[in-house]
Amino acid sequence: MSDDPRSLTTIRRAFEVLDVLQETNGAGPTELAKRMDLPSSTMYDYLRTLHETGYVTREDGEYRLSPRIYTMAGRMKHRDRLFQTAKPEMKRVANDTNELVGLTIEHDGRGLILHQEEGPQALNLGTYPGAMTPLHTHASGKVILAYLPDDEAEALLRDGPLAERTERTVTDPDALWAERERIKERGYAVDWDEQVIGMGMIAVPILIDERLHGALNIVAPSGRVQNESYQEELRQKIEESVNRISINYQYGGSGTPREP
Amino acid sequence: MSDDPRSLTTIRRAFEVLDVLQETNGAGPTELAKRMDLPSSTMYDYLRTLHETGYVTREDGEYRLSPRIYTMAGRMKHRDRLFQTAKPEMKRVANDTNELVGLTIEHDGRGLILHQEEGPQALNLGTYPGAMTPLHTHASGKVILAYLPDDEAEALLRDGPLAERTERTVTDPDALWAERERIKERGYAVDWDEQVIGMGMIAVPILIDERLHGALNIVAPSGRVQNESYQEELRQKIEESVNRISINYQYGGSGTPREP
DNA sequence: TATATTTTCCGGAATATTCGGATGGTCGAA
DNA sequence: TTCGACCATCCGAATATTCCGGAAAATATA
Image (cartoon, rainbow over all chains, first blue to last red; front, side):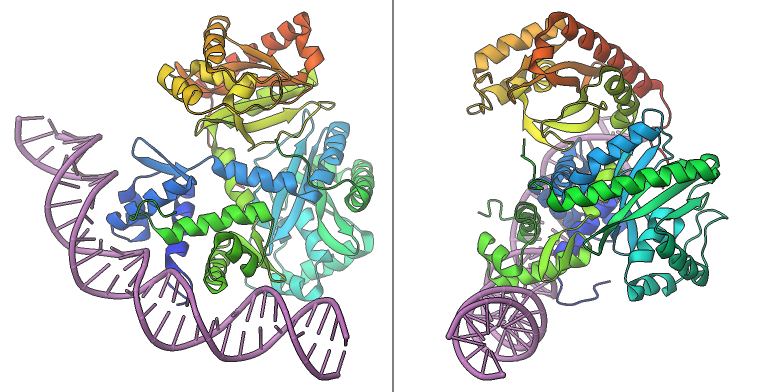
């Protein structure tokens, strides 16, 4: 359990408590103690301290994650230059196309949805900002894989079996490696039904100064994405959008908007 | 510094590190050690462990908060029943009015923006989900103060001096207490230029089962909010919206949508 | 009311944290 | 390039902290 004898177990456990609180959606000391296999008196000490920090709330004997997490995440996002420059563009495209527009970044070998903008009638099949998914299961992730350095991409594809989300998910490393080349040639990626049945996606890389910052994508029902001319239309729109994002990212304002 | 000798200092410090990382937006052990007045070797132990947990990233010698925070906040929000029921309604109103629609909850005596939906051309003066503000500085907060139990509201108003955000901010506890009565009679609150010059707000309480769950508000330029008939129009729209939210909250679906 | 269960509190033993100091790496100036 | 300053990282030993069993209080259950 305790791998490195030099790391502070108290901290590791405290964050494990946070993780468990996330899963249980609130619990008392005894339940948490059982889950983590600790005496409940010890768990009590942890909870009491976490409560003191303000990251955990206590209401009628139940401890849960505090909305302070929202504040932390909100501030981070608000200060994120990529998000700030991408957001107005994403809104534009979302309203223009009436689809779901997403901004995905790579974190820890997986895809993380940094932001989403939904057109008024856009469909949203349960994805949300903050959600993490395996890179190989959708167009955005494949674009990221394509523009990641060869060794990193290789490591991600060859390391262990790749999750299968639907029967259309591509889980063969060689096939994915080949697709990687095609994506780099064309400059974009498309998929449908590979992550969620009924959902398709067109994605382009956000390259600024040769460096990959993430991927911009449009999500639409699979049927629409398979329509060649519509697909082409959407592709153009996000490509133009990425161009504007790229310019504004480099030459735009301060990047750190005012705090309220 | 360490008030309660029974709380775990290691945990308190670890979270203080998170707070400092938030402010500094990334730093090395030495800088953080200075800020927290600890030896940098100790700080190193903390950072190393925080990195292990995945809540802090290390890139070229700089430690910063990890995007994992987004995941935590995103999941919490995604599971929040109030958010889930309010969101589609907020979108509707935002697109209908072309203004900024907000959902504010009370946390720790302050107002926390749980969610925002912006109409295509809505103005947004730097507020963002997760941001916290003093309750007495805007309509949403005043609505919350009005429907909070008397003793809690009193404690918040009488405890220490009230922050002044603009020259129009009401900072007199008696005036605020009086306004509280008026709000309860009318069932809504309005303000302009009290939090930010040029910004006005109309807010109504979200009462479900007699319990206050938060406030729904529309933000618009002060000029438009002062226009009586427009104000009335917006008020009606959010009141209707809250009615629908209230119904869907009670009788709606599971409340916990699928995880991706 | 009685009983079971859970939360909270406490003291002392065990041990995980802590800190000074050593090491190796990086950057910039000369 | 060499030198010096600064910083991240590593290590071992002293000791302040955590940790746990068990008691008390509070709450739920019967």
